[in-house]
Length: 270
Image (cartoon, rainbow, N blue to C red):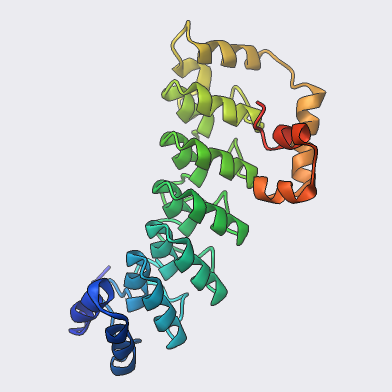
């Protein structure tokens, strides 16, 4: 893909975004043709302001008419940069201006960027706004695969509570396979508690158990689950949570459930 010529005003404009005063930002918005100022990858000043997490600059640029859904050469929108930065203030501004929470970005969704960089609050905001939790990136991985691989347990829990598929295969590898390869007992326990199948087959015709050293707690857990029939209590737990369509503990808390039931449905009690 050919790079576009960079507008000569881009570099000085970005410097103002980085270190300029509010007055310099306001002057920039008045004096520059914001739509035409693009870098070689077709990023706008709004992209750069979001990547920097500059809330005031983002507000001024949006109010001046820059469209939040404009993508660069890869379809990467300003929301992708905001998620990469992790600023919930910037993300909220974009959402309030009608940004698409699921843009067709070649390198991954805003939720994927937030997950890769461990921005739990940004993830929560994006999921609440309707981010597709099971949308894969170009490699086929979903946000849950990334969170498991990073041992980002808060992210794993949030995604699973947001209806991420614990059995989602990426290149014929499930999140449980990834946890097993790392001998990650906690990650595997979270996945199993949320309905992950204990013995799926990957592209090498191997189950998660095949990746785990014997005489480990994870091996014993998977070996037990493989030979077990899920209890009715466990199935009811999954079904009830899905029925109420709660996109996370913050939504469940509004139901005023007894504390034991709340812990049970939010999987604080595995």
